[in-house]
Image (tube, rainbow, N blue to C red):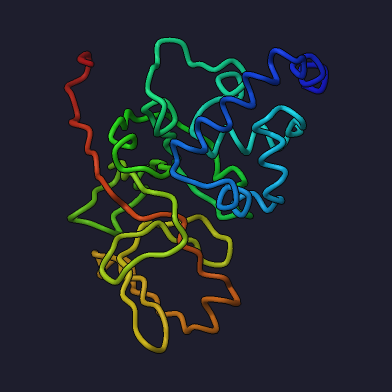
Length: 227
């Protein structure tokens, strides 16, 4: 892999990379300073990336690609071929089977597929998909459903959010706020108990909101042999 990243930093590829970073950053509705905050870098670093005066290292390239929901190859080539949409990572979002909350800008986990989401161009922001692993949110959400979530670190009372507690795999829960803390509510309380966290616990664990659900998709099971 190291030899590959030596080759890509030609002037031509750097120009494409700079343009891609700027394009996807703008499509996400982020200013340079907001984007810099996501990646824990200086705003000036974003400016240098977008003008081709400095290149991200290989690890940061992977983080950028995951953040935008595209491959590193697409980020470097301006692809993927055949996609003309600019917002919402070329009109599609990455789908994860499990999400882990690392530092802002780090890859959320392994991408298991992609979902078309051209509405991102109208809605603005950065989106990702999560495949529901269990029945904790039944009957509104069923195992295998895919929720599309907008990346953000806060949620309003009553919203369904993707939440990680103490760095563990994230889960979809309904947010209920109280003066003394935060309640994460599963809809199927028979199988999964609600969890309450005080404001101190929210900060200390931490309890992190990774995104808020904007859409749910359910795939119809087809008889064997049909697709």
